Amino acid sequence: MKLSGFSFFAKLLLNLCTYPLFFLLLKRYNIIILSEGRCSDVLQYGETEINYLKRKDKKLAWAIEQIGHIERKLDADLFAAVVRHIVGQQISSKAQATVWARLKARLKDVIPFAVHDVSAQELQALGMSLRKAEYIKDFADKIVSGEFDLQAVEQMSDAEAITALSSLKGIGKWTAEMILLFCLQRPDILSYDDLAIQRGLRMLYHHRKITRELFNKYQKRYSPYGSTAAIYLWAIAGGAIEGMKDYAPAKKR
Image (cartoon, rainbow, N blue to C red; front, side, top):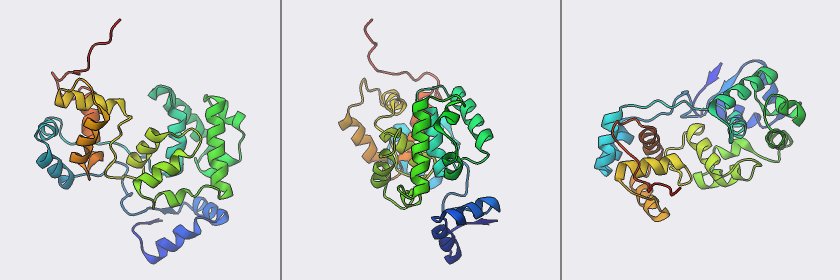
C-alpha cells in the first residue's frame, strides 16, 4: 500500500513511524509512506527549471540544448542513502556496488534496526573498512535510540539539514549536499566542494580557476534551480559535449 501527499492519515502514519514497534510493523507488512515530491526514482526537473536557467545564462542554455534531458537516479530512502554514501567513500563505484549488494543480501532491508542488530565486525566482513562499519553502526544506533531524528531532517532548511547530517560520523559537507540533492530532491544544491562542478564551470565559461567568489556568482545566477544546473555541469565535466576542454593550468611536473 502506498500513501502519497500529506493527507491527515499519511501525517498520522509519519508521526507513528517514530515509534520502533510501529515502524517494524510497517516494514513487516510492506507499507510504504512516500513524502510529497518523492514518488519517483529519478531526479525530477522540467520546463520550469530549464527555461529559467536558459533565460539566466546563454552559455548554459546552449549546453542544455546540446546535451538534452538527463536522468539521474535517486536514493529512495534517507537512512539507506546515508549508509550508501559512507560505504562509497574513497572507493570506486564498482567496489561500492559490490559492498552495497553484500550489505543488502546480509540485512535484507537496510534499515536502522537491521544494522543495529549486527556488529561492526560483521559489517566489516562484507568488504568495508572497520572505521566505515563503526560509522554506520553509530548512525543506526543513534536512530534506534532516538538520539538522531532522521525524519526531522526532511523538514529542515538546506543549511540546517547539511549541519545535522554533517554532525554524523563519516558524513562531511559534500556528502550531506549530495544526500540533499539525490535523496531529498532539494532544488537548489550546487556544491563548491565538488571538483566535477568546478571542472564543468571551467569548461563552460573558459575559466582557469574557480574561486569562491566566482562560484558564488554562478550559484546566485542559477538559484533557485542550482540542482538542475549541477547535473548539466557534471555532464559537461564528463565530456558530454565533444570539443570542450578544461582550461585549468597544466600541473607542473
